[in-house]
Image 1 (cartoon, rainbow, N blue to C red):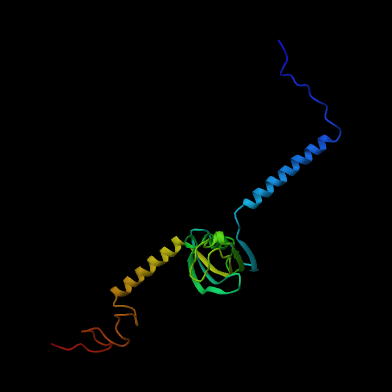
Image 2 (image 1 turned 45 degrees about the vertical axis):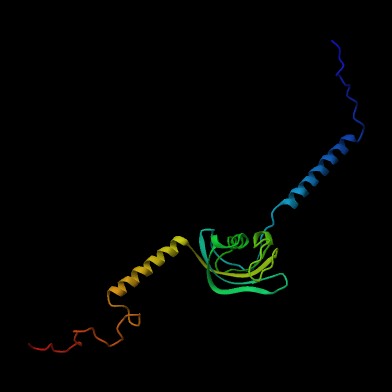
Length: 191
């Protein structure tokens, strides 16, 4: 049997092993840099005033004060005591609210990819980064809000069955008496 495929190993030159490890390290750094550059943009949330307690989740409705601005400082939207379902917001806004606590005030920077992307949205040009000043006043789960709404509906139905609450639409004015009713202390007529 012949040994044609046999290749003798050459001795490693002095210092070559260190160079080999430097090459491996440089390759890892380049690969890490490429991976870092390919990572999706993230929302930046800076705390202005510390909040307390839990943070809302995607299934919650938040009550907030906010002001939205473009990079040039132009205000495109603002509101006071606005209820917003986190699940209905742009991804960056939802991600920012999930990092906040009740009573806190925050400065939020949302990259275009997590905002409206390459689409025009009202006064917001395509590919615009967005900046928000947000105060998280409160938040509740959708289930809590639905329960409160059911209770309000039941209360309204009870008031309608009892002739309405004073001042409510369809209610009798204060001091008025239903037809056939007698004022307190009056003597009923004798037949």
